Amino acid sequence: MAELESILEKIKKVTKSKDLNDKTVRFIQWAVKEIGPDRVMAQLSDTEDIIRSNEVKTTPIQVFIGFLSEVLDIQKKSKPKSDKKPIKTYFDQDQESLINRFEQLEIARSVDDVQEDSLMESPYADSHFPVIAGIDASWFTLANNRDKSDKVKIILRTMNGDKIKASMVRGRNRPNSEEKGILTVYHAKLFSALTLAWVQKGSPYRKIKSKDGNLKYVECVLYITARELAHILRWKSFGGADLNRLTDWLDHLHTRPYYLDLKKINGKGYNFKILRDVNLIDYTNKQGRQETLYEVIFHPYISGLLLDRRAATRAQDLIYIDNQLGFLTKFHIEPRLLSRFKQGKNHYDKTLTNLIEAMSLPKASWHKYPSQRKQVFEKAIKHIDNTRITENQILRVSIKKGKTDYLLVAHVERRKKELSYDLKEGKS
Image (cartoon, rainbow, N blue to C red; front, side):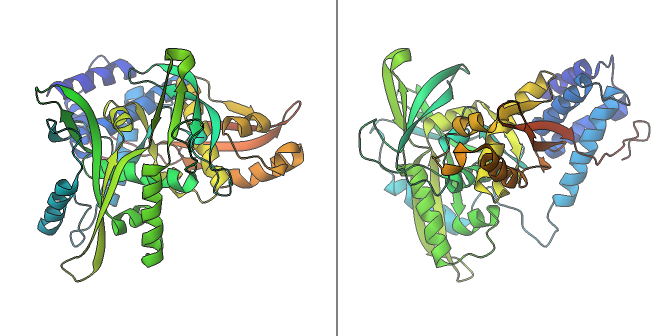
């Protein structure tokens, strides 16, 4: 009840409404129940953006209700029919026994540590996936990159939300240690699919405590079958070779490291992987079909950012971009464009030369020539122009001629579909 009151107060503040009538309050209460407070507040944020851009043709509260109506309409259409089973948050008896076996195999962190399982109290909207603040295109590379390691510049988000500039070695545990390989676009898509699945399964996590009850760290945990994961990735077929490929990529997320060099800041360096651990069990399900169940444990750093909401929710469109350069470009420009959009500046541009450097792309001959840079990026942006950012916003991107180089130019547009909502009748 207190959460609803808080949401209503924020709605009144943003829409500059002195009061809300009973029908509107009941509608918002229903929306919170149906799609969750996170998605309701996302629509309020979009409403605030529209107000700031002076595009409001009706009252702000009607714009907000219209956004909610559209989301609820999408939710209704996307709900599975009665003869289809939705994705399960909990596992059937066979899977529970497998999970117990996982726990028996798990290597102890400390003999005195205590594990406490939990679910995120206010989970993310399950139609979107969280993109962790600070993790962007520079963390991944194109699949044709022959380098097994390199050093890039990044903006790092600390646990308390601060931003710091740092250098990061990709593919090594320490600057001069053995090369392990750099994660690619395919791994980035898989990681995105894992976070989406984690959200859809209730956002489970573990609290790791010392024997005296003090919290040491948290780790997000996901149990998912290989077929479920392939379905989220929209793989058209799934056979033995696909299973091996998926398993290898999961292992890469667990074994291909990053080294954060913060010696100029605090005299220290840290290495970590995106996943803390991955385990699997092959078994035969009740229908006699061979299945593979994965236990995926996110690194405590990643887990902490997810649970502290140091992440922005994004439409699933990003996961399904086929062009690798297009994927990295959208991954890179979206947070920067939206940050400017929140400040009332609906415009982002960058020279293609600077964009190549910012995304840490592997060296290629086409980088040297303006016409070739333009040609390659024009092909890439065809895959990301007019794709969704949020439920109510789409990305528009093009290449323009600048003074010394071609520019990638991007802005946000509202989705053209609009639903009206009659506040008097309470009908959409």
